[in-house]
Amino acid sequence: MFAEKKPLNKALLGGIAVAVAAALGIGYWLFKPKTVNPGAAPGPNVASLAPQKLMIYKWKDGQGTWHLTDEAPPAGIPSEPREFRSDPNTLPLPPLVQK
Image 1 (cartoon, rainbow, N blue to C red):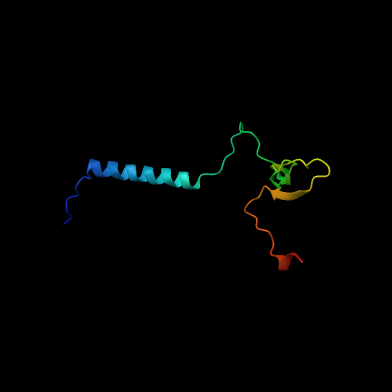
Image 2 (cartoon, rainbow, N blue to C red; image 1 turned 90 degrees about the vertical axis):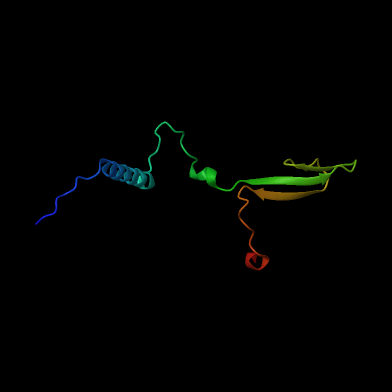
């Protein structure tokens, strides 16, 4: 009437156990809660994330040598001041929008 049950193969049971353990491990790795290392140094504060500005001056000395410095040239020497920001991925607004 009833067919005789075959015992499960030990290798099959071992393979299933390994697959379940691997699935649990991958699930934990993907969805684990983000933890902070208490011994880690604190991250930057909001003020330090603001873009920094740097003024560069381009000028030519009396001998014809060009200089690029972060300090203004000596008095009486014409220069081209340029402002550089620390956020290089920010594009300036188009001239029509700036007005």
